[in-house]
Structure formats: structure tokens, C-alpha cells
Image 1: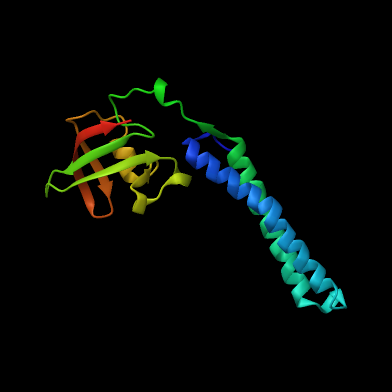
Image 2 (image 1 turned 30 degrees about the vertical axis):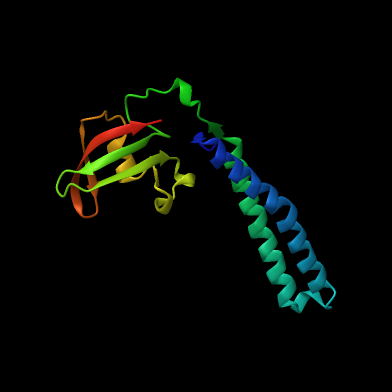
Length: 157
């Protein structure tokens, strides 16, 4: 059984849209490829047919995994969260203690993480180091470059 994952409404909507796309357009495309390959004759020596059947199997596997994720997904109720500490869906402004550089990140589930968009996973070293901290606290984060210290400047929900 998969574990429950928490998402933003936007993130869950994207997952559901992707699942619907795979079930409709994806399956239709694979069925067309199989039909075209079948029309080419002897199936025992038809590499195109074998490739299309393999692609069908991979598509169905992806659909099954996505269905499991969507089935265990929950949308977070922001009103019931402790807004004084860093947690999922909080945007946290942090300052590197060593060099004074400030950055802001929003903590999200692993599937929604997108560093370019400023969204980091709760399961990442940064996410783990920041969760539960309050404004003014210093988070010590174990990064590949060693231990880094970040001061929590602001928490926005």
C-alpha cells in the first residue's frame, strides 16, 4: 500500500490531468500503433508489433502507478496548520549564516518539487532541516557540500 501524500490543489489537479491524458490519448495512440503493426502481416516476426505491445505495457504500468498516487493523495487544509513553524506549503525566507545570501523556498511534496520554481521537497535535506523551525531559529542542513546554517527570516502560508 502506498503512503498518503499531501498536495496543493494545483498539484493534485495536474496529476489528475496527466492521468486522464494517459488514459485517453495515450491509450488511443498505442492502440493505433498496434493496429498499424498488426496490418503489416506476420506477428511472430514483426518488431513494430512487439515494440507497440511493450509500449502498451509501460503505459499501463505508468497509469497504474499514477492511479495509486492520486488515490492516496490528500489536499492540505491550510487553515488547520501551525503557521508559526515551517511546514508543508509554507514559503520560508532563509539567510545563509556564512555568506548572508537570502533565498525563499516553498516546501511541497516530492512529486511537486521544482527547484526552478522555488519549490523544494519536504524529503530533501533542505526540507528536512527547515521543517519545524520558527522565525529567528537557525537550521543546520546536511548538504553534499557539508553542514550549512540558515537563519529563518520569514514564514508565509
